[in-house]
Amino acid sequence: MSAAISVFSILTITCYGDAWLGLLYLMILAVPLSFGVYQLRTRKLSASSSSRAEKLGRILFALQGVALAGWAYDLATTFYAINVARIAVETNPLGWPLGSIGALSYYTPTVLLTYVLLFKLKAKVSLCAAVLITVVMLLMGSMNLNAGVGNFTFFVWTASLSMSMRYNLLVLVAAVDLTYTAILMMTSRKRIFDLRKLTMRK
Image 1 (tube, helix red, strand yellow):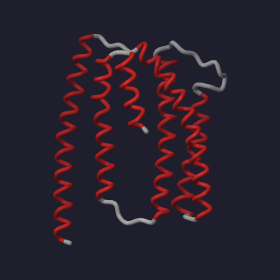
Image 2 (cartoon, one colour):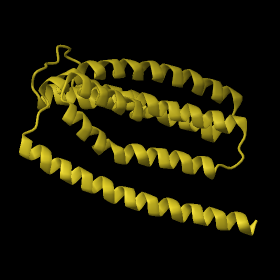
Image 3 (spheres, one colour):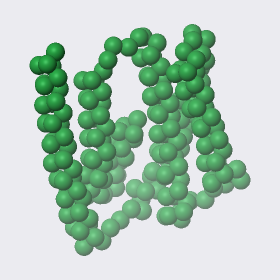
Image 4 (cartoon, one colour):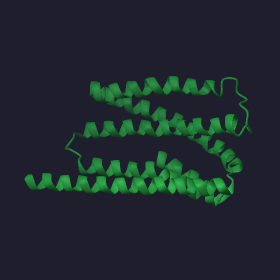
């Protein structure tokens, strides 16, 4: 979900805002996005045989992360629009920043309860309850995501950098990306070598 939000943000900046800023944003996000892909591949390679209930439980718990990503996106874009750009105001008295505390008081116990239902109780009834809780949480997260998409337009309208700052930031991000790429390649080769050794022993 975080990857989908990132791609949407980059496309929005590039199409309706500053193409250079979209490229810089893409370079900044290259590190966490590629690390997420690497972790996903690693899990698939080292996945052990597990029951259908365990796989479903992991999927449900991952979907809660989708809802949390939508909430975090709403939080970040609201903070930018109101506190950084100062071109938006909260009309709801229970809105920003009280709304973030209210959402946190909902999401935190919901995630903890789902974790207990899926990985501690491990019963059919608890699995059904976890499905219902996850559906409600996804609906809440979709509302947060919709609000975040609306708030992101404020960033597109107001984000700007001077030319000197652009080049300095570009050099810094490029250096970080190259260093990260080298480290990731070394780690991947070592892991592949270890897996081959383990396979040969078997």
